[in-house]
Structures are given as C-alpha cells and as structure tokens.
Length: 185
Image (tube, rainbow, N blue to C red):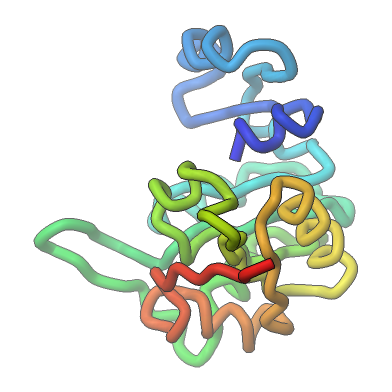
C-alpha cells in the first residue's frame, strides 16, 4: 500500500509496536514522502490503515486518541492463531469490523484489503486487460473516499454495502475471502 500512496504523491507515516527508530532502514529504502512515527502519531492521519494481527487489535485501538471522524481502514482478519493451530475469533452474528468500530469510537470504519493475499496486492492493480478488484464495506462517505484512493492506484472497487453485510461477506470464512477477481476494462 505504501508504494501506491507514494507513487500517487501521498505522504505516509509508518508505525509499529517497536517504535519509530525500528523503521529507519525501511524509511530510508522507501524514500521521500515517508516518515516514521509512534502509533499515536500515525493514527492522526486523515486515513489510517489498521493491519495488525487480530489478537492485538483491541490493545492497539484502546491506546489511541479520539478519532474525530477520521477514516480507519480495517484490513485485519479474525485469525487468532495461524499455521498448524489455525482458529478464528467468533464475533457472534457480527462482522469483525463491527467489533473494530466499537473499539474506535468516532472513526469512520471501512473494511478493505483483507481479502487479497499480500503477494497479489503487491503484484499490482493490473493483470493484462483487467484491474484487480478491491472490496469495500462501511459508511457511504468513508467508502467514497477510500474507493477514490484505491481507484487512483488503479484498482477496481466493488462496494459491498454496510459494515455488517459487506463485512460478513469479506471476512475470513465469508464467500469473498481470498477470492481474486479482475474487472476487464
């Protein structure tokens, strides 16, 4: 995602649980437009991407300042353990992104980027005559802003509706999880 943002002229603040100093080599590699900050500093951006393991979601979001209507893109998957001991968190009849929204009061939450395997996302938005599809769900104004950003990168955007309905379709275990689709232009 960082490469797409930088290629289209956006500034990026990266953060992780190890602190800004741990990102210095990556910042040097990515070049101008990229800075490192604390999690709190990165969360002050107009659009924030949440990409942490599911067991850390609550802890990360509970330490952030008020969201004040900023956009939070939830790219998480409700995987509790991976590899041979794979299991999923059970949000009941709610989408996992609804739980994320509960943990980030005041944020405009958009579920996106969790259905693509990272190597597909990193290989670019185009394959031959087709554009790779990115699914979105959430509130309308936030989806429009995030959708415009992904379209700017070259992806085809499909709006799945509200956070509950669309979130259930794209979360792990839903019919769109891991599905790679292309829109032919």
